Length: 157
Image (cartoon, rainbow, N blue to C red; front, side, top):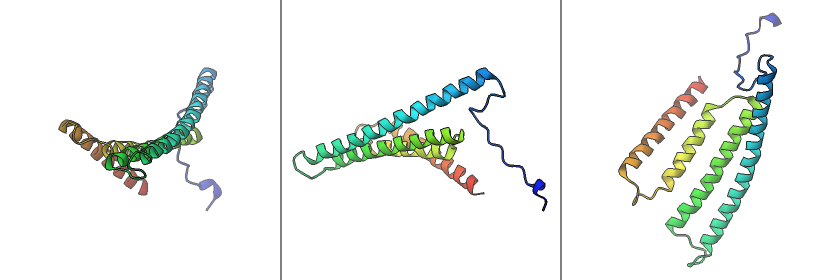
């Protein structure tokens, strides 16, 4: 096979590309990329503060009477804190992938949304929430689950 007969590479749309030679667009794209870098730094700060919050919440709950025992509500509060950190980490991953590849990975965004809605479901107080809210949350969860499955199955083919 001749080396010149290679199949063409798949083109990836660059959201913040060179701007087709337009200096204004190129300058604006550069400014936006710098703003995204600032967002990445701020997200790292949020992650570290969230980890400190998890440690504080856990410490606070463990030292309340009865000592070193967590009741069910305390466990939900700690889980909510953990999941908030994991969601922040997923958002950071989205930001860094966008900076690196200039492409939004739909599968990762959907997975982040699934994690966020799962966190919401875990911390729901079923004694105070209205049934309509539960139906809406269930519909969003189902829609995200089906969307994730469709995107993941499309990626495998």
